Length: 402
Image (tube, rainbow, N blue to C red; front, side, top):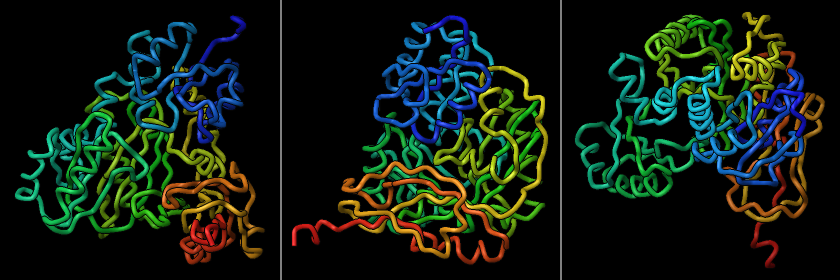
């Protein structure tokens, strides 16, 4: 690889990372991607693919040293954010929080403990490293409860339990799924669910964006996001205040600061925080809705570069990011799009093929489309039914046997 260009490593290379790869190239970097899935779409867009498990910080450090990288950027995954912080700390690269801070924000038990100590609005929770110890949560917390691995996203290993009879089974499943073998148990919070994506500059929220989250078969895996959100200004102001307080307490570096929260009686309760781009091309939703070059801002900050055009921008229309999914397990026949919504689609990315095997329709995504509406009320009426208008037509296994 030529040494005439600075090298930036993205610790990942999935389809959601393609905007980051393109942004880095536009900034003059040659881009290295990694990960243990060579078929991932992002590797086709990078200059070099170096196989490696991006959830292993030492493996990422080995690749970074071997390639003599100049900058590192997390992909759309919490493990990658932790590894990127580790690499940056070991190599003295700018643009990242300390490794310990990354662990505090991206491991759910550590974040819950930090939030409780700091008075950040978050569900009452307990963290555990042993299944037997987890039984005490039934005495300390009120049902219903949510049981989660501390280190997974996308709804993996998460269960709601409403009784003691269900509890230990959910605990076992969460421990089995957790890479670090740690779980968190928290009280269930009712309300609408949203994302708050902010960009931090010198400890202040210089830009923010709010969405409404939507779900398909799994109540814990976001399948769509829409904006403008229903979140009132007062709640947004509180999220900005809490975000800047967290920045001060943890001395956070400039860059993306993404929050998932639940809104109840116009009050936000923060559920998760990450310092990496959300998945499923979310950063393109922000870009389409506001006109800001969000992927470039993220890469610039991760590389320690200034963002000269960083400023707040209003949402310029009504937009939906929709993950194309199906309703059953089986073999993919085709993608179906209702004519009345097809005209609203203006961008997208598909990776499906006829005959694809679908084992879990609650998590299997076949593509992503972006839609634009002229009227916010119409968007809000239709967005939750889009899974019946844009979906994967899957032949169930029973039909194939017959």
